[in-house]
Image 1 (cartoon, rainbow, N blue to C red):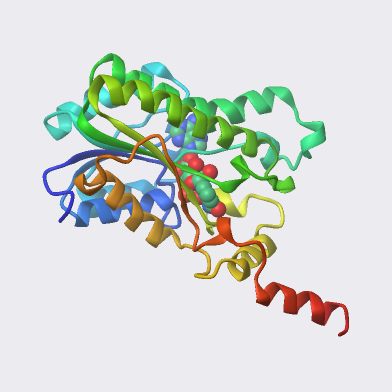
Image 2: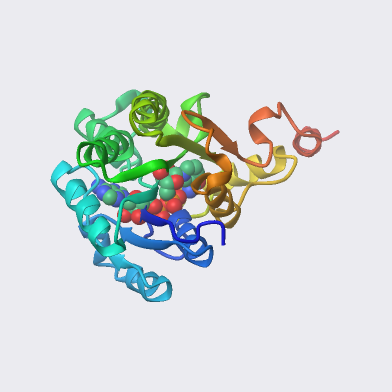
Length: 271
Ligand SMILES: NC(=O)c1ccc[n+]([C@@H]2O[C@H](COP(=O)([O-])OP(=O)(O)OC[C@H]3O[C@@H](n4cnc5c(N)ncnc54)[C@H](O)[C@@H]3O)[C@@H](O)[C@H]2O)c1
C-alpha cells in the first residue's frame, strides 16, 4: 500500500493492453484514489468504463492539447478526490504521419505539428494547467512515458522520435521550475517496445519487438512491470528523483549486441 491516501490522475488507458491501464489497476491496489482521463474520442470505444468500475475511478474526458480541458481536468479531479493531486501519469502519444505510413523524409508538416502537440506539448500543457491553479501537492510526482528513439535513431519511429526528444526536454525544463516552486518532481520512463495499440501501429513492430527482446539481457520490460516501476516513482520512496529520463528496458539501452543476435546472423550467413 505504498500509495495509501494519495490522489492521482491517470491518462491514456484505452484498453486492457495500454500501459496506463496497468498503472491504474496497480495504483488502485496500492491504496490510491484515482481519476481516469482520455481524449473524448477515445471514450467512444467504451473500454475505459470497465476500468472505471474496477478501480472505482471517475472518468473526466480531456483532449490533452486543450488548456481548457486540462484546467477542467485538474479542477474537477481535486473536487472528486478531495484535495490536491499527488501524482499524474502522462501516457499519451499519437503520430498521424505514422498512422498514414509516411516516411521521415516526406513528413506532412500539419501532421508533424499534431504529433508534437499531442505527444510532447501536452506534457507542458498538463504541467502548466496544474501549475497555474496550484493543483499538485508538494512532493507530488509527474511521470510521462518515453522511448529510446529520443536519443538514438529508429528509422520507422519517424516524427515520434522528435516528439519524444521534446517530451524529455520539457521534463527537465518544467521539472526545474516545478521543483523550485513546489518541490514537484517530473520524470520520464523510457519503456521497452510494448504490444499496445500505439506500439502495434508502428511499421514492422513485431520484428522490432523481437530484436529488442533478444538484445536486452532481461528481455523486454512488460507493461505490467512498467506499471510497477511507476508505483515507485509515485511513492515517497523516490522523493529526490526529478528531471530524469529513467530507462525501464531490461538493460537494452546499455547493451551493444547480444550473443543471441550474433547467432541469428551467423546462421543467416550459412556458417
Ligand atoms: N507501446 C510501446 O512500445 C511504447 C514504448 C515506449 C513508450 N510508449 C509510450 O507509452 C505511452 C502510452 O502508449 P501505449 O503504448 O500504452 O499505447 P495506447 O495506444 O494504449 O495509449 C496511447 C493513448 O494516448 C491517448 N491519446 C491520443 N491522443 C490524445 C489526446 N489528444 N488527448 C488525450 N489522450 C490522447 C489515446 O487515446 C491512448 O489512450 C505513449 O506515450 C507511448 O509513446 C509506448
